[in-house]
Image (cartoon, rainbow, N blue to C red; front, side):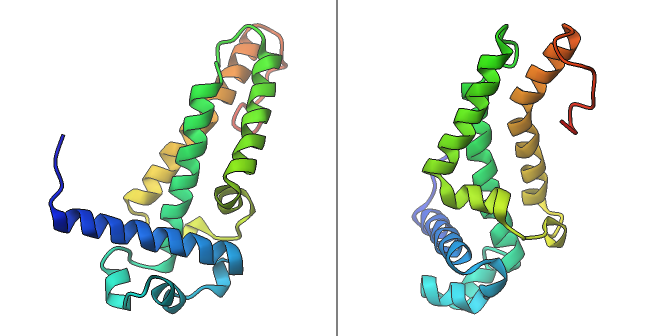
Length: 163
């Protein structure tokens, strides 16, 4: 395990603060209504401090979306057994987990499912690749349930990704 220096910890804490305050602003006012200057005011840093961590407002939002999808993927991965014999119970678990996710993480839910933010505007950087990987991880439990059900003839054959 690598120990961070004091300066590295401070920079990491600054980045976390920027993400937290930005998430609050985006959810209160809407993505389009928030400017980099609004974020600067909320965190009490200048633009250079913001841009030392993020290339753009789109990238900040992409990091928030990554946090949201990672949390959802963790919940589904831990809570759903894609090879369960009782697929009905597992689909009900999925629904319950999504409901609980919404109830406990409304801000993240809105970032994922209700935002009008266009991911295509995000610089195709590592955060974008991480979002795609986490989306796939979040889908995996339900995909596994569907594929197993189709293989066993319980569900009609169809495009699993579309479903």
